Length: 509
Image (tube, rainbow, N blue to C red; front, side, top):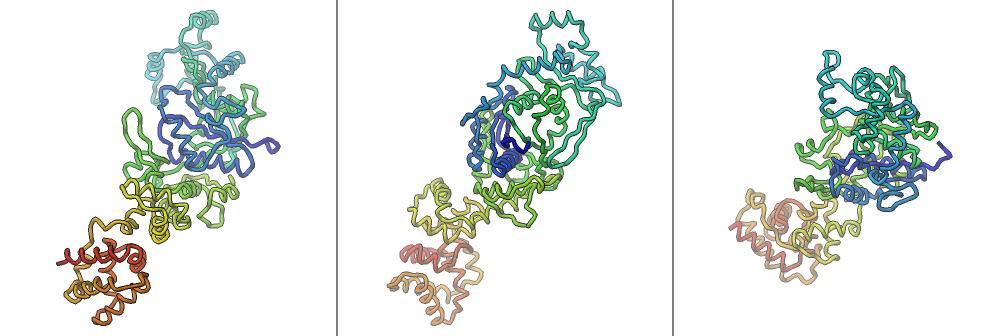
């Protein structure tokens, strides 16, 4: 395997929004490819046309682009191993399925949906409450193993609806080395005869994934641990097709768990607990239902990727903040956990806060500008950069820049008057009346001069300056938050400062 070019793939189905577990699978594929100077391929697995959702494929590509995970080959970019949509590869699958039938490793099954339903009833026992189409039942069903050869031929010539199923062997042990879990083994008696080719001629996942991985020369397969039960079917297919020497290495990734650690994190959990589980906003084209995403909530792509990488992996040093380039250099499968990782939204927000702090104002400008434009406020870039520099350390989400910085450009919509009233008195009222008058006389409008005027006047009136700073802050920004209050005063300007103080005094009475 070492002399081959590393080729890994992310192969989602276009059935809706992209769950953060899917993005993490794409990320680990990407990191592995970059670490080993290989290729990262996007393949769209759209063989199940009943679940196909218009717009989902473009959404997947947009999500990867936002995350910085640009594939080397994809439906958009093309490549030497296309097409990169399974639906466009349909003609090639039947050849492999028919080859399996000829070799005796698969068979034609003519059972109708009603007959399959009846099978699940007729063969149900206390010991076998959920009968499957397997080695114990196949001979009792309508297929080319149980029917005379001439009847099978007649059915095929009449174009009778049929599927092709794999013929799983009885009581064989399938073993393979998982790059994360080590040696894994299955007994084939526990696996049913999966459908490989459906009645419409489209392959199922089981056949398509093996054929495509072979033809695309995939060297390692990274997928969620929920696919482990399918591994024996796929390994047997590689063997039955005579492709065993080209079989990729396998790595089954741990699940992303609910915050309480019980079960796989789902969209419903996010809806119930109030956080997104999709990378970006997704609107279902059939129902119009909007499912929120991390991007629109105000997450930076760097923070989202950093957080995802750490859900099931670490570098062993305790370091938590990694850029995508650093992850590419540091990532190794030996540090991927075997057990599931609990999703912690507070920790996710911590990553975003840290990445906002370490980002420059220039890096954040366009994102913050979008927030202000949505609010109908247009601000010159130089003023917006000033605000971002002053408040970014206080922002957890990009959307926080509005609350933490909009007061620089427009008067507050409301004031937290109770914060002032609890210790308000006539002396403080007189002080602020005098202070607002004195602001007109300041020639050098800068925060050190404004602060000195404030402290000098407070001393002349025998009031501690510290008791007056909170009321001043509320007067200027509307609440108990924001950067140093005299820097705010300098930035909003003389006229606006005087106006806000006087307006608050009127409301206080």
